Length: 550
Image (cartoon, rainbow, N blue to C red; front, side, top):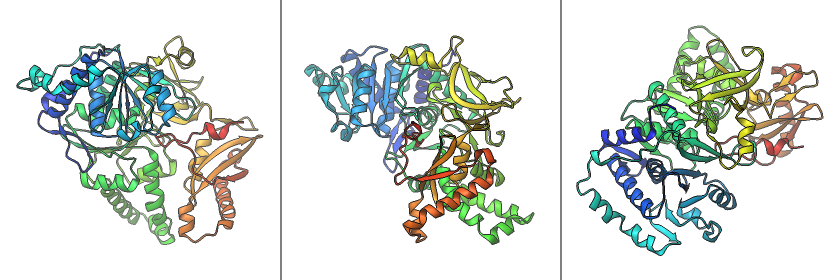
């Protein structure tokens, strides 16, 4: 266990930054650190009245918002266990998770609550609106009265509310803080149990290594119910006294860039999808023009052009960021190479929910091309391979960040954490002498080719995804032949007035170009066109398992 506690970080930040704005929804007035402390302590009063003890579970179902963050902080600082449920889940799945987690209270968005059935969550004693903090329904009529009295109770306890009054739970780091139900790309959701130690280790590392200063503005647009967005767009900046602006709805790249332009964040976190779209739609068409190709091949001139492209790109992200951190999925190698060539300040990290989430990171000016950083200081990482530098093996991790297991699922826990405490990530990679981790793919998606060579479909897919008329692709194995399931970029095809009957021919031409760039053993023999976009997790990873079943 590490000595630092997340609750201490939160308390210290509130006291230090008492009167400055902490959390706000985009283009709305937000809450100061003082106002957040008041809301937290009022909820603590209600928790005690409702008979909630340390270690009890409280479910939180809602879209990203300042109020969502307040509820999260209130539960964790009370010593309760927060159960964040993705708002994208179907009502049936939400109900199953709420029941499976043994939650006693439910905080929920009003619109989501309309589709849930109170009779089907029998262990929930009260339901509270995330939108308004009103009590929506309770199985105990006396709680309705006591909930209305929390304002008076607060004034009685804290007649002259001041920073010194902010003292939360003394819960120790070994205690459970979060049960995170992953949507995942491998099928059935499991409840990842993250102790306070894991959250504190992630925050501590970020404070020591990520380029952010107290008071810096941050834009939060990743799903907060996922550990990636929660840890680095919310918890870490909050403990630093930053002002976090939350994009409440699932934002499009256009809305995200609009917010960046207005807020000018100092640290940006993103999933690859957003960055790759900007490269493919805005940059690639320009640098692919014949005259640009010629100019970019001339020494001296190319440096000036790269500088101009970089400055324009930086301006798109607000112009004031110290670093852009990409994580959550594999980053397209062509996009990465180009961004590195122009000197863009970005880095690629690696993590998973089971580590709360961080496993490896390196700053933009120390990271290696193609790598996903180096192990964080609270974890050991090794490659399960006789030659870890050159021979691909499963990435194993052990240490402070690792989960306590899957909630009420000992069998699944034993399947991923071995007797020596190593978490088997399911990811394949190599690691060089300096500790740089190079991820090659997922264990479950790796294909053994007819010649006995390992094929990582993600590598082939990244080449397909750079084709003009391909939105996304999945490569699968069918009877020892590689087949690409392709979802065409129908908007681009329509924009270029390409008739529907020509699409198969155009996509097959793309297949031939892709094959020209790949070794023979990775050649794709057939294309299957998808009429609808691939099903995805809220983190925008394709649910590969739906398309690779026999």
